[in-house]
Amino acid sequence: MRAVTRCRLLAAGGGRSLLEVRLETGRRHQIRVHLAGTGHPIAGDGLYGGGKAPRLMLHAWSLGFAHPTTGRMMRLASPPEKAFFDAVGADASVLPAEQPRETPAAPAGDRPAERPAAEGWDNVAPWYEQLVGDRRSDYHEQLVLPGVLRLLGAAAGQRVLDVACGEGVLCRRLTELGVQCVGVDASEQLIDAARRQVAHLPREARPRFYSGDARRLASLPALDAQRGQFDAAACVLALMNIDPIEPVAHDVAAMLRAQGRFVVVLLHPAFRAPGRTSWQRETLDAPPAARPPAARRPPRGKAREPVARIRQYRRVDAYLSAAHRAIVMNPGEVAGGRPAVTTTTWHRPLQTYVNALAESGLLVDALEEWASHRTSGPGPHAAELDRSRREIPMFLALRARKV
Image (cartoon, rainbow, N blue to C red; front, side):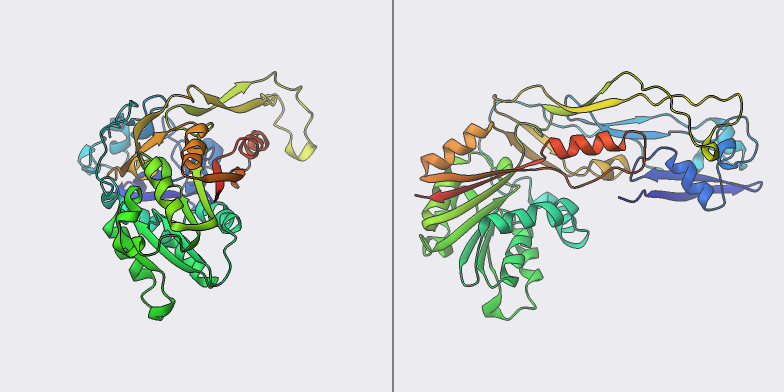
């Protein structure tokens, strides 16, 4: 992934500029390297050719992050020193008007009362459509969709039901393969978006999209008439946002033919449960400092410090107990000052999913664990970070057959 730094000019004077800088990625010295690369290094940055200044004129004004325990989005602020404004002949009034703020998230807890299916999804529909539509999600495109298509094994002419279909990405892919697809989602806005995406296709070739509750599929007239007529069904990265799940499994089973396949993809409940698992690092003994090639040796008198070895692992604080929590879906945008988009996620152990499927006559015949495909940028710990991503899966996929 390329490093991205966004800059906005706040004031200029005396041959210098005051910039507001926002990071989309977090590489070592990223801001300093990017600005130096434009020919405008930061004042006081002797390493990258900056002019003289009483200090490195780089200041962390606002920092946004998700609290590792509560999941609450935090915003911390520290106003810039007066010297920053004096350098360009300005004052603090040039700072953006928006104020750092906290975005609260609900604590984990027991199962709440059942809520309307669309609650929490119509408000995220524009963000979600952009994520998997215009902007694309690399996880969705390179990891999840190929795995789902393989597990479904749907052939041209077969019929597939996409439960909680969102804006119809899977249905569109299946249609390209000659599969007849029906998508259902609780959000009318997402269903409208799904229909817009296929409006250019001949009417007889379009997937069919319906607004409805995944927990009450059989109550939809359009689906009630199609009981037992689907060769396969899928619920991709959505079942952890639905509660309870037993009615979903029951109605999906009713829609499938004998030996019909149901593919479910989840954030891995053991290793990726929000608020219950987290990345941790352990520092190991530093290796002996190796003598670098002459071209890369530090100047005389400046010994190169050996880089300490680390081990990255996934910490699991709780697993078997069920819980729910509000999740901020766009933490990077929130850190940049944009409104939070939240949904509710239910954590359940794997046995809950398998048992719910079994009670509806759906026998699990395949289980796959998918690791992240992403790799780290150059750095002393890149190999270890990549190793941990390969070893600790991000997604869990189940396939069950109607028996």
